[in-house]
Length: 261
Image (tube, rainbow, N blue to C red):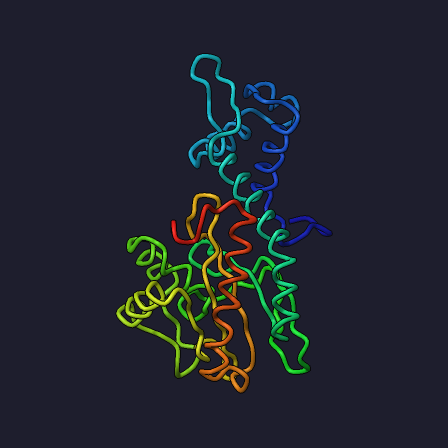
């Protein structure tokens, strides 16, 4: 490594991204064309192309030998559009709900078995839950994560548990697959999930599913507050408001009805 070089820079990834960027200029490339355009030898470029093809990011035409973007990129692009649509279409309902309740509200998705916040509006109380867009929360210990896990096939739930485990954060955290399965069963019946100080002592959260244009729950709407403001009576009062806001977001996303989920 030479002086002045970024110690965290991955040269191999850099080369791969340079190859990918070329496909924004042209639909297809041959190995020779890419090598010439990038000023890199064919052996290096071929290794990059071969790796990207293996993972489905590129596809090779056996007749011409030309490479073009694969289905993996199209799937990622479609997901990015859906998530951006969710983020901004959810904002007005979130603002209305935060104003009506005074509490922090947020929308999240499940990504690789982890709950990720994609939009948030903070409440008006002096003492309130603070979060940021992009925050990642353990699915088994968050209301967002649990309500999304509840509507996944069993195999995907098991895969998420196997990949991330069930770390204990507080005395209330669910730490066994059996306990989680039981909780998910009740969530499907009730239509909402709770985080009862399972991730952080003193913080409670309620979440309900948000359906996409197919009617499937692919996101979740949650409200978070200090446990002192979230007793049983308050939770019972908030759940209908939360469900009404989630239905509003679902309709904006083109969902035929939450019942179809």
